[in-house]
Length: 400
Image (cartoon, rainbow, N blue to C red; front, side):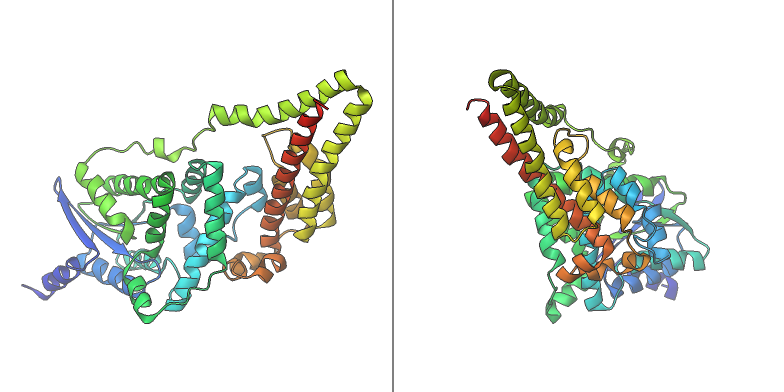
């Protein structure tokens, strides 16, 4: 056996490497941990040893550009994110990225280094690169849309807790992390409590990645992906079934029942005000309308004050909350977040330091970027409190 063949065999026998031969093509699946130097070294060695026709990477174009140019979230148009009502999904991504980055700091490795290494070594050897992951924005929105309101609250609380957790790890735990895709492990744990979340974050992406890898050019392909994706991808490739990528790349429409419920609450409140006006007189209806305005406006404004929002944002929350509470189309939180972004825009360097800022209470109030999220969360909470308290009082006043 030649030295080259011996090297190939040695790398192919690595624990997280799977070799699949099907229809005259060879797929070498390299499972990595996104915060492991061992994974970085394995990727370089196996690409150089195998010299494949194409290197497939678990990245979409947006994430690849962010990682390769070290911009991460800096290129985001925050106002566009708010217009599309994607703040919650972005916050989830930031919290997850922050936790992963802090784990990486324990190991001296930037998260995603092995993915960049795959692209780098491919370019050095004149090998084609294929970015095979689904757009991260689609993944997050599908994951968020799959959850009930209660599950969304559970998810946010889980990630919020992780944001302030300092991962103190023993030597044994550090060694385990070096060998495993911890991010996929975390997703699998969440999936036990929230199966629909795991479906969007892991299972769908397994099928998406497998299909994109099969569509890549070449007879011998090396695919570099998180270790947690290997078994699902292997099954999908061996099945040889063409996956409808469009079907798993669209954002699910809101359930008609949720739309009905969304409109039922404001309809009930407006109808109650009208009924009070007919049965108890215009003065009573006016008193209840003023009460509705204040019970929505004041908690929303208080939320903005607690977030240390700009005075214009506080005023915007005070004025908008009573009206946004009567429509499911847009919430007070999105109005205040947009105004805060406009009158007190985040600084460029804050997009770079968000991973560190998000891990401390001071960081949430000190960073203009994170203050936008604080404004969104606290004014939304204030508006919700006002809606439920105000709605229950007004409905009860129908009979009093």
